[in-house]
Image (tube, rainbow, N blue to C red; front, side, top):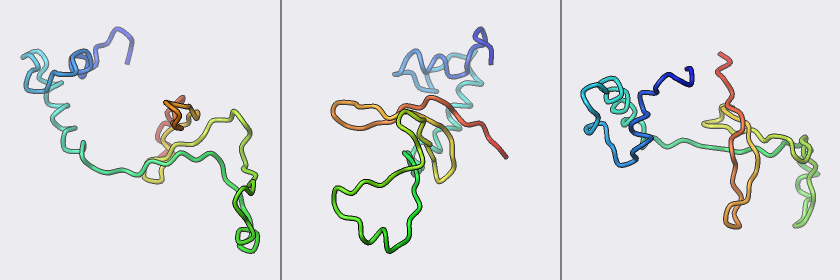
Length: 113
């Protein structure tokens, strides 16, 4: 979509209190699209942020103690993978928000199918 093209959700994004019922007559398509999305708002999804992976034998795993360091297949500063329902959807970076870890998306992965 070009920068000049208007998204059907622009009115809702500009006014967070706006609902599909408040959209004007010119926004019939936006009202229809927003109402279709309402059906999925409460659908639970599993979101995972994978910092890296490591392979080891079960015997090695059982020998791990508190404080052990496990080497991952990623380097410091490399993007992490973000999965939704076990499907790779984005890459991102770890961030600190009010003394808690979070993830910010830096790249959306387009459908590979």
